[in-house]
Image (cartoon, rainbow, N blue to C red):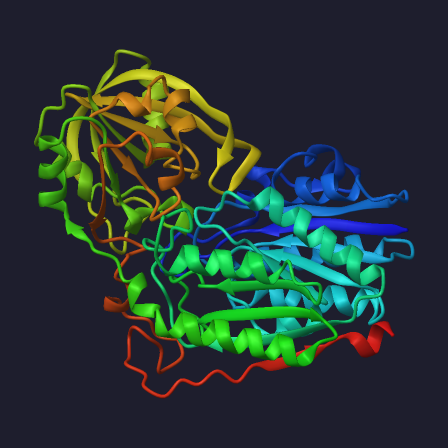
Length: 506
């Protein structure tokens, strides 16, 4: 048996004015051919798939296609999109006869002129491998699942967890689905678009109660049924101003159209009825910082609007401006994506004092700039291995970095974007993040996986930015209408579409 695997991963935020280019993919680590198999062993979805395939009783010949990852950011440039699809299609065309293809995708990639990059990739791969070869793809829980994606793939397999602590396991689930199809399963997918976009703050599947943990349990239970190959709810990346924006539910069965449609309809109806429970409670900047200063122990402020995990620019200083008004006994930790500041700090060296402008360079739509005097406390390389939300054994390199001191506030400035919530980042900078008075996490929900057992309090802050929690108060020009919560909708009734590949595999 001959299988091919590969990955294309980036989450697009069209509100971010910083375009995603080929350099962003290359800086995170492009892999081709055998390097995909060697370097991704034990890492994220591909690592989970490889680990699962190694348990199969019969030997499998594996071919690596290509791995093209970029950190979440702005719209992918047209040239970069052409390069992405060209890399994937060329890798597929070079294959000898193949029995199955497994791709690890994000599901929310949008490019200039191509709002559904994954749909284009899956359609092109299908054209090249033929109708009879199984094609399975894993997706992020915040994927924008489109009919083109469903029509091209035999099965789509989504994360079940937010924070995304099941990326490795999702790769294993995808490989098991592929194995069942290779053994004769006849995949039928029921697909339902749900006309709502849900904020991620209250989507914590690790919570003790709420809609999101209930959906996770329901999906896991469904996948234990013999006739069901995969079930998923995609609550979509909210900051994509594109025509097909909306949530989706998919249920894939082994030839059982009735069960696929019934379960998809049930999940979609339940998601719709519970949509308002996803609306977050936000606290304004001034009371949030004041509450943090008055609370003993670590307080984590979620600056979701500048969340680098949501594709924001990472150089907002709206919270920093307020934080600088206070003294912090055990210090406050704030991050910035600021390559020009890092370069200046490297030029000045440790101990140098500099008058600087902070913020508003990358996000020139919603950001602001403040000025101040900083001391270069430390220079370091932001290199570490990420485990937890979105990562398992995932190498991260955000380039040259600097700790800039402003009184009792430490600003961790990096050259490149990355997980600007991760304790590993602060540890690489020389801090114990769990021992600070205040930590700003540029993440709407994922940070909870690592801080909830350490923090005395956590607050979701309302602030301007490219990934606002109250996105419905922002102008979107291309989104469909009506779409909740921008508009009220009274008459939604799920009617799933059915996609069958059984006729190709019989």
